[in-house]
Image (tube, rainbow, N blue to C red):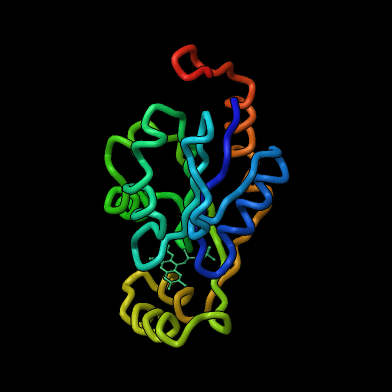
Length: 175
Ligand SMILES: Cc1cc2nc3c(=O)[nH]c(=O)nc-3n(C[C@H](O)[C@H](O)[C@H](O)COP(=O)(O)O)c2cc1C
């Protein structure tokens, strides 16, 4: 089957993961802010999104495009400061339709945040959030930044995609 990666990114780390996955699997990667990207052209979709202010930055695109990939396999990767766990699960639940959450294959990656790259607004918001955060490790990361970018983290995602690439197109999807 043929697939493609659709991602959103604010400061480039989700784009970096999408490029690594694209290079490892040979499937194209599209920034969803590019209007040409159409999931209905593919047998399966890989969706990548950063967590920004407790929400997935791709949620509006997903709601708009979901009818075009409703019957197709979905691999989903999130990029966040937080690791996999209940906080991340809650942000996903607040961002995506539950029907999609139940059927997608989700992988949690951790990204990068460099205070020097941030817009004034984001810098201010993260300083306020960092001072108020009762989780002091997360609070310090909001204030000082972090870099968890790890190319090896894509390996399980690449495996999941390779399995889909080997699958035959289902009869009712064939052209
Ligand atoms: C404005 C802003 C808000 C963020 N909010 C969260 C958050 O709520 N939870 C979290 O775990 N990480 C949060 N992060 C960390 C991002 O998920 C992380 O920096 C990610 O790598 C950003 O992806 P991008 O470079 O593709 O935009 C935030 C980062 C920024 C810049």
